[in-house]
Image (cartoon, rainbow, N blue to C red):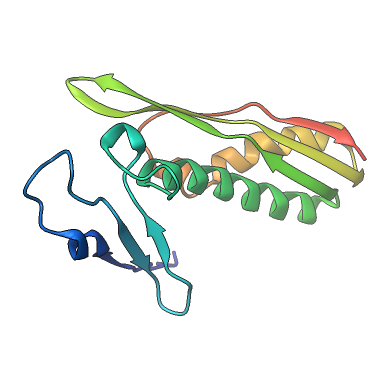
Length: 153
């Protein structure tokens, strides 16, 4: 079986605004660098004193699950001769206290797909197969629910 490696460099850019003297006021800004790609400027979520205008780790986890599902689904459709012409997802994640720790307890994907050609029932069924094959969904310890809709263009 193939092995794949992924790497990034994370750098706390908020240090330029001062050290972590006070929990309420230190900057949560950081950047994520991956070779050959533009940097991501991130922060913590507003609930954790972060900048609401920037991506946060929770956003990135939900988007990684949605993106992985979409890319897996599109590949399966292409192989099955189903012509997808539009795909949009309104994904959401829920974090709560569980076993004394704050954690994700569920992510719900809500892909809305339009197809121009191919079997409508098969296009709907491929969402389950995409979920089974999604690398990211297979790597988390909480349920990832898919609530897809598929229609003809």
